[in-house]
Every structure is written in C-alpha cells, then in structure tokens.
Image 1 (cartoon, rainbow, N blue to C red):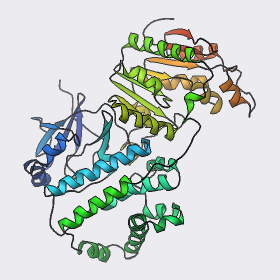
Image 2 (tube, rainbow, N blue to C red):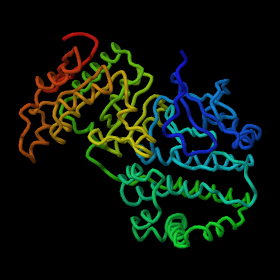
Image 3 (cartoon, rainbow, N blue to C red):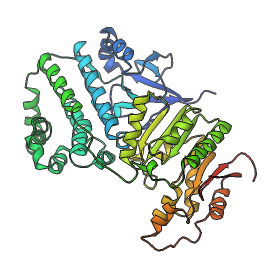
Image 4 (spheres, rainbow, N blue to C red):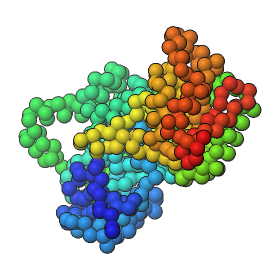
Length: 464
C-alpha cells in the first residue's frame, strides 16, 4: 500500500504552494494562483541560471497528484535542515549575500523576490542554497520591493547587532521567528551606529518609519508606501547597495572559552593521535551514513568521521568555535560537515505554530553514530545532569555512541570543581557504564594513552 502524502508542518504560510513528503521523497506543489509567475521563472531563463550557479536546487516534474495543485515538483531531499538561530555569523552573512545575488539576478530577468526570509536558505555541500522555488514574481514597473523589510529583519539587522554588540545576539532569532523587530535593534545598538549612513537608513530610520505607520493604524500608511514609484534602476541600485553594505559587515573580534580549545588539552600529541585512531577505527566498523559530533568545537574529530560518513553534524555551544569550523569547511571545500550553534543542555526546541513549524534539534539529530568527546564532565558537573539523563539523551538519537569519559582526577574536571563543592559521588567510570547499560547492550573500553581518560563505545546490537 502506498504511503500517504504528509504535509510539512512548517509549510503553510505561502498561498502559492506547499511542501509534502512521502517515503522520504520531497514534493513541492505549485498552485494555480502562482502559474503565471512560475512559468515566467522558467521561460525567462532565471531558473536555469540559478541552478547552473548552484544558487537553487533543481526540480523535476512529478506525475504525483496532490489535491488543489496545478503542478507538483519533486525536489532533492536535503541531508539536514538547520535554522538561522543555529548558524554562525558567517553562515548568516553568506545566506544573506546569496539572497541578494538571487535578487539581482531576478531583476535582470524581469522578476523579483517576493520573499527574503532566512528560512528560504539551507546549507548543502558546504554552502548556502535557496530552497523556495515559489519566492519569485514577475516584476511590475513602479512597485516597491515588498521583501525589503524581511531582508532587513532576517539578515541585515541580526548581522549588524551581532557585529556591533555581541556575537550571541544571533541566537535570539529563536525568539523572533519573523526576524528581529527593528525598534529592538535600534535601541540595542550603540549610539555611534547612528553615524553610519547605512545603519541609520536601514535600521534607525526604518524603525522610526515602522513606528510612525503603526501609529496611523495601517491603511493610510500602507497607501503612502505603495504610492511611491520604484523604477527597475532603483531596485538594482538598492540591491547593489544592500549587497555592498552586507558584505562589509565584519564578524566581531571576540574570544570565548572554547574558541582555542585544542591548545588547552591535558594529553600529549601521542594521546591526541591515539584518540583519533580509536574514533576512526570505531567509525569504520559501524559504517554510519549520518554521524553527530556533539561538542564538535573546531571539528577536528568531525573530520575524522567525515572521511567515512556521508553526513556529519557538528554542533557546539560556542559561536566562535562554530564560526571557525564553518570557515574551515569553506576553505577546505568540505561538503559533508554541518557546523551548528547548539547548546546540548538547552537545544533548539520545536517553535512556531503549535511548536511544530520549526522542529526541535533533537528530533532532527537522529543519526547512526553519536560522538561526545570530552563533554560529559561539562554536562554532569558543570550543569548538574545525572548520568542517567545523559544516557537517555544519546540513546534517543543513535544506536551507536562514542563517549570520552573524563574522570575526576583529570585537570579539566578539577578546574570545574575548584569553585564548587563536589556533590557528585556517582560521577565515575563504573556509574557511567551502568547508566548507558540501561539502553545499550555492549560496551567497549579504549584507554587513551598518557591520560586518565577512556573512550567508551556503546552499541545496541549485541549483549555485554
């Protein structure tokens, strides 16, 4: 019996079409109301140009019939879906520049982007790609760019705020599903930002304009905006100006505890290489398709996995570390590593309408192999998590787990305990193995030479 078509829980805002899934295949419907614009996307050559440039994913027409659809497209299923609040500064910036490149190309083909939300972009094979084929409209002379406000709220404003104030502001996109409110951004920026013509125009003056229009209660303000004439040349100038302004935003010079982690380990190079050898040996044995390196830092061990795995998720709590990892992905041309900003003690929840519009990280992180190196002491001692809780988490995301246990005598644990009372009598290797034994049938131990640490490999496939 054929599996029923399931509508994507985050696909309901666009009247032009929706996204569906069946048997792990992804379909996008095109409604009759969008027919004219879709045909223009194809006929003008814009679609072919964007596909050739790697800016959008190709589609193929499907004979699958979905109620209400004028046309059904089958599109490539992406290995992992991430969200803007999980991206580093440079990831968001690259997504922003891609959006503007597409806007400039669209204008050259007599079309324009009607949407400029960050959720239209995903990362695939190491770079951003635009995924919404229904975001294009035929350009009508004199009309404004209706997606301008979206671009500012989803891209320019968060980038400016993180660059001028603090890198951690990017995570607030989790709170603002429709982009940063500009009055919030304007109030949060330092006063000197008002001397920047671009920030003054796109943030401070824009925020005042929105406030003014809110006070008029909508109708007259909307008419005032729509009544202004915008020529094609004006749109092109605006797109170029925004591209230049966005490209000039620099990541803030900010150091964090984990940004230079590999220079602060307590085992020698031989121990480090031995740790790599153990991880690679286990990975080859498991032969996973998808692995997740929890607490990946700069991705040193993610790259060990990446030699043998199709997809490696590389989440870390530190935005500086994730930024550096992403820059390495770009520099090396790596296509199967996905750096993400993620706090394992407070992972991205399900948010949006009914908490289903954007899925939680745990729901998306299912993998064949989970790896957690030198993180468990931060979870259990730094965050007071019982070992059973940690075991429960990893058992929920993978059937195979590589865990580096860091005992109390380790200098890193002693550092954590130096400022607090030791209230962790059960934090030891035996209790850790016992906690995981509730879920996993087999455990192998690999002592790391030159240290008191042990690599543990848990699997559900056979008995202890």
